[in-house]
Length: 334
Image (cartoon, rainbow, N blue to C red; front, top):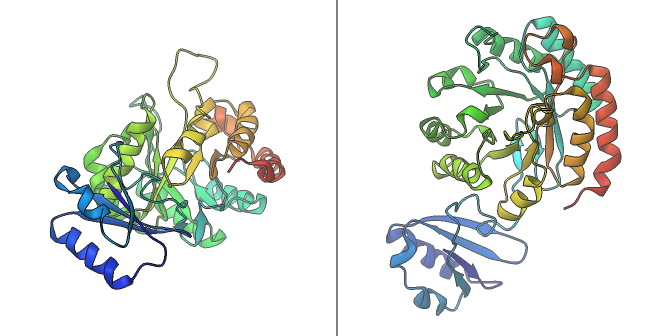
């Protein structure tokens, strides 16, 4: 349920209303926009007398929300959320490119790539320290050593770091991480999401391989229900019958999510296509479609990468992509 208040309401009346609602057991999500103040009720609203609330002098309208996601719902929060990622903002007109290798392999590799992508305009550095792989024999990442190397790259370049977590027990290792990524396979790992909800770290939540947008938003809701509103959504492609691409990049998800939620939406054309030659065109299309950012895999030597070299750009290719993004940004749908 949302309560839309009238313009220029008396603050004491608002306080009395919110105290009463909290006193009868509701969690509140209060959003102050340019024109309206919205109070979102979280809990079982079936026991609330809508007519009684609507009759109050400070109330404009009262509406029930049909969607199961509440905190992530744009009806609760009209304006786009702006998320601070270690001093770099994303959302609300702040467009960011997150770039770096699929896996951290060595200090020379991660620091070199970090310097290159920063010079081309990337605002954040991605790199996998823990790698979920389909095969148990594939490279699984450098783990704690990988996190240390990411921190070194951050020290050298100043770029906030984005890396994936595999389980809640690893959280103490992520103190120096600015954005914790939840991968597609863990999108519905609800116990992990609950733990992340107790932190105040920014969470980059990737859509699962076969999950609906509502399921993605409900996973975001798990994090936000714990009090952590610093969530970024990521469209990274879904599994279909098509075999010429690794996944099918669902660009229609961008305008749908922007309509449904206030959370920033980024797109991963690297995993979404699985081929380096497709990344630039899909990145530009995602930008024009209204994405708040991109996450791009960049490797200094893709043919010899330990993970996902086929979809990784070279630093030179990334520089070309970044310039193309700047050219199309003015035409992005907002």
